[in-house]
Length: 211
Image 1: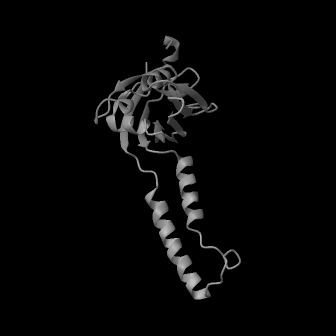
Image 2: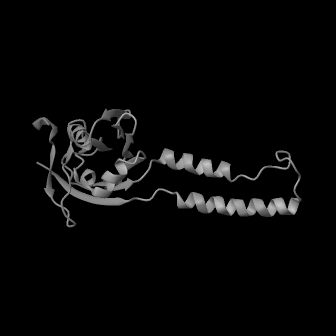
Image 3: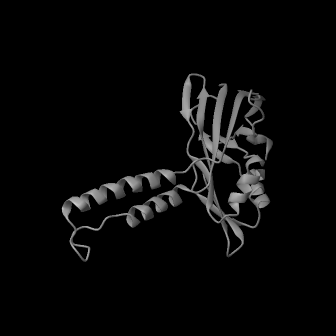
């Protein structure tokens, strides 16, 4: 990465431990160099090989003097194609279109993300003499939002009670209503049970000061 990219440098490490490199680029985007740690976790590696999408989602807050900015959505979807025996990786970050790569190994994923850091926020309009505090939480979830939506839709359709005109016979109205209520409750429980929950969470923070 060129020296001209660096307008701010990391001066203060977070109290909770080490954080990955964060830089303010010449074009005023905050660039996060995603660390190897999530990709080296045994549980995450096991899930990456499952064929389901594993998602890394970044949320957080940027404070610059008296201004508070919410981090723009940034995420990485990784799915192992069992037939092609390669990883399909989709990254979405600030100020550019989503990009997709087919990569042969987890190490290749790490190399790509290190070569092209994630844009996690735009600091346009923020004075370069300002001190900037950044807090980021990275959630690793076992499947994507799209997969969650499809699963809930499938359960909703599978558990739907046919209307009076759809079935072969005609059930009593009260019985049909009671059954519909039971199915509705069951569907709600199922859909809640398949909600996305993080299997790992990483917290990072930085204080950036001008050189």
